Length: 236
Image 1 (cartoon, rainbow, N blue to C red):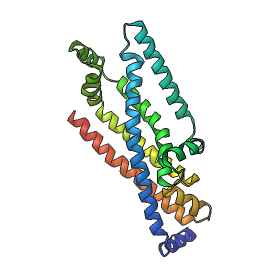
Image 2 (cartoon, helix red, strand yellow):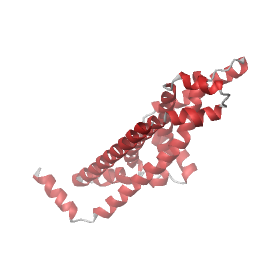
Image 3 (cartoon, rainbow, N blue to C red):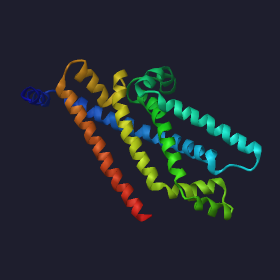
């Protein structure tokens, strides 16, 4: 304990803090932009999985077959991406990341693999949430002649809004952990600092500080997200 305290005291007197501040900012940027693209991609995929799964089965044989094929393909892709460990996915996607972002390093190079890893997870959460909606909602919408778009935007999404926000919160917390793992291949952020200074240079105080900041970020996300979800649940 004395050695660790001495090391942290020495860290306070060094010039690591600007890099730690920049690493924290990079982690927030990676998490924020990745979460935005994850929701933009994962939400439509989740809705499509739900609609083609079992709620909107058509009486027309050709349409029903197309729905089954669509669901099968999307479900297979989602399951495949979810089954690959994120660290392996990072390495496999390096060529694609360079093509999309122009680099596989830093904040810009970390966002594509983060989105590809998190979007299927969020899509599956969205599908499961929509499956919990009362069947009476669908029957009422059909009786009023609502289109599929009206069913989604005026009934399904408003009905599941607190649950969707909770799913976004869970995804955001997962992205914080993923962003730290991206530091293994030079992805930037606190994970990169932990690897370069904490692991490779055996600098335990830097490792402790970066882990502490990550814990604080996750706790802040959890507390703020829980309050927002609770407020929306009471309103409904």
